[in-house]
Image (cartoon, rainbow, N blue to C red; front, side, top):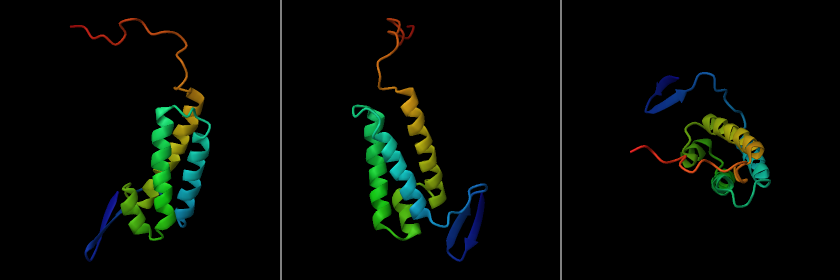
Length: 119
């Protein structure tokens, strides 16, 4: 990444991360898609509970904060493009989680001492 100094402000530009012209709309779409896929996951799954709570919090911030810089500070994810990248990764993960179904019972029982460490 590159650092640029302008008077008192430090701007960081990441190589390979494209600038987004409409970050609010992009994030709104991604957060909504994440929540839509989470609806299909078991309500008892810990991943669903945590991810749904975090995504709803971020979506609420997005709806009330029109200023990109202030939104970046509230989301605490770096530049807004990084937040978009993180949301894209989360959407990919939630879709994979739907395939993996980690909330379902194991196919077979684990060995009795699987987690016991040698003394």
